[in-house]
Image 1 (cartoon, rainbow, N blue to C red):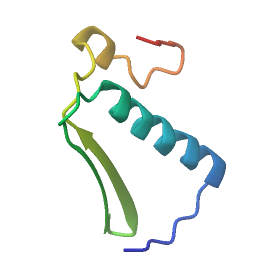
Image 2: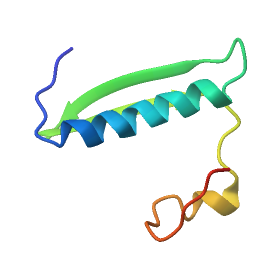
Image 3: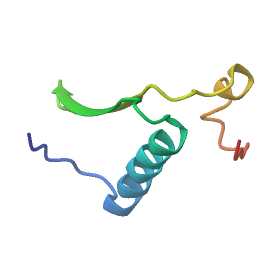
Length: 72
């Protein structure tokens, strides 16, 4: 399914590539990585879901904090 999106193509590509790369890196052999998209009320929702190890709780609460940088 195709969607028309007005965004910075380079930035969106980097974000999606990083999410998929992390899903591959942290999902064990035999695990599942599911990539989907949907459109609602003129907004596009892209979902990358995996059966990987996940993010530690203490890092999860700060995941969108632009002042913190974590590589673990």
